[in-house]
Length: 197
Image (cartoon, rainbow, N blue to C red; front, side, top):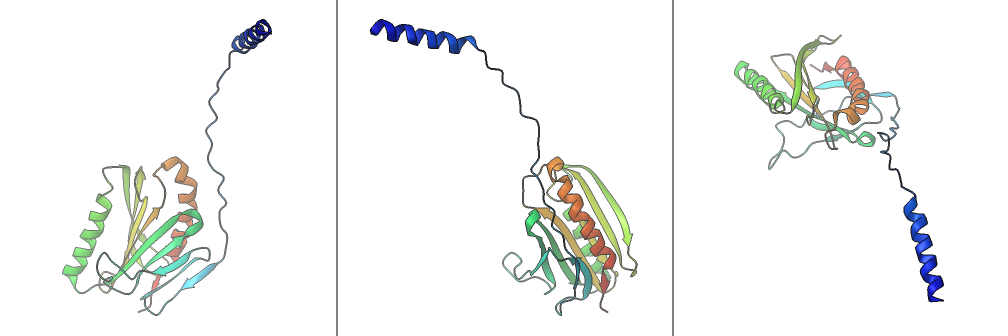
């Protein structure tokens, strides 16, 4: 009986060792993305000095905290793209005078420059929509936390700033389709943007 077990074990060992397994790398794939759909709706709350259209799949949350204090103005809010793990952080600051305006512009450039160490490129573009609202649009490429930041202002009274972030590890290739989808909605938001006064 022992001899039979030894022979059987050797046969199994020989047959299993005779076949060499070939390991092939799996093809590179990305997860399937289901993009939300919906109509446009009007953003026109009493606590803000502007209106614009935004997608109905996004959710607006008023920002009540800024580090240890309250925001400078009640019109600080986040536009949540929950299904896409994205957030457009928006802030509004009433301009006090020319020196205050210059300070806000310099701060906006500083916030963009913080991403220069990781960015492959940076593009600045002057924008003006059909309502005459103008500003600057910053596009950053590479492994940066935010690929898009922009400011809209009338240079005397109103100053609005926004930046888009995704709650995921920075991988430009895999996030690109989601970024392009959200960017289209943000561009439409900018085009419909108008001051109330």
